Length: 197
Length: 354
Image (cartoon, rainbow over all chains, first blue to last red; front, side):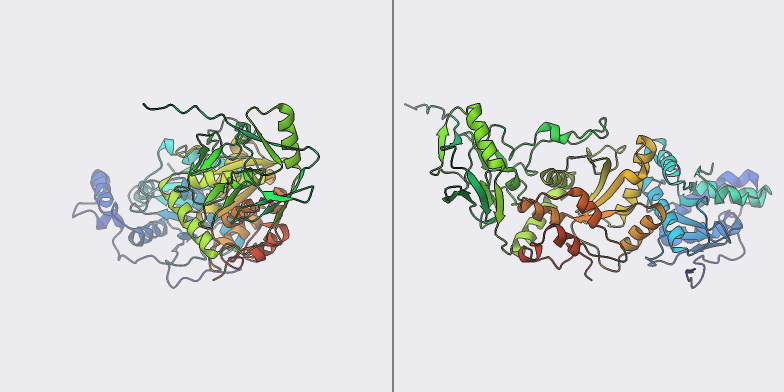
């Protein structure tokens, strides 16, 4: 099997503070300050380009317990922006930073379908047809965009699951893990079809 | 005192003698075409003036293939995407040489061979008369049938001359510039070229996001669905768009995936290092979807030389992927003279070259 080589996992090491602590501005990180801290985080990252946003997504996925790799820029052979690497259910990830596109759109889903085909064909990592192909973007698509319809079409036609996750949904998962002791069931992500929540 | 000129009546050419019929048209392309008659005389190919003017408008029915009857699509009947050919004051088709870009789409619509390109790459409707033609103001059904029948049997002999690179360079520069300022024009060019090849297709109306495929049509029991990218679109977008098209056609309209023949129409092939060839291979390997790539340049050439090709054959032959990045051999199979007439036969119009 042809394995991708990564010089590092592409994820910046940010020290011992988690993303909520880094954006607390001196507040205690707890349920009562959650809204302010989330607001602080969104205020900062809405201007993030791919070079800042992708590693941040990678960092959060790692903290959620996934073995995540962000693809190095310029690796054209490898179409995905990142991977969750798993012994059986590796997941290609298409990431859209807020400065690339604010909300996940049909184009992102198209890329996720292609990522799935490429991974199944080129076998960089082990995966199965049932395993999802993810799109992680700043915001969820609007209803009018037709993104969820396209995800249904892809499922019916090819049997592929395409999961979409907004940055907020990702943050909520992490918050729940740290501050509500609710660990995310990884299988929900690995088999996601449509919106996380 | 100003005199009013009486309006001239429209005239139609008919064959003078039903025993002397046209045998072949000798196509010069960049010069006046000739018609060889059965008495061995050779005359200039001239406009005999049709009633319905197929060089100006397509038959409306051609624009409505049965597939997806509810799909909003471009119903513009005009043959010339630039709208340079119109009926003149005397009732004959006339080409505006200022706006004509010389694409040649109108050329193949004239069964009399009366339209050719001039030395400055503009289309011209050849007018005049010759010994085998009489002119009438009212075309009888019999004369019409006689004329149509005689010219529909005619053979086409084209002179395999090498076309200048300048012609193509100027043409593509003008087409791309026109498409840049006219949203949807590239789809329109391709639709008309396919119609001339005998494939009835329809193209989407720009602005309707529910219909994402650029072009759709039927070949026997199969469906052809096309993505058109002439305007420097990211070529990697095209296979992705095809996957979207096939999923929608299968899921929403119930077409079997193996009956869908996806086609990418591109102006030039991406370089050898482009991952698009690998992706096309991956799609074939994993989903058994065979994506065909046809260059716009070949459609232009087939049209200029009035070639009628078997579209099914084309679909079978024009496949590129990581193991074969050229359609030159495939093109030679359907158009053997291509290397005699095309100065670009060894270029990115046929294959990955760098």
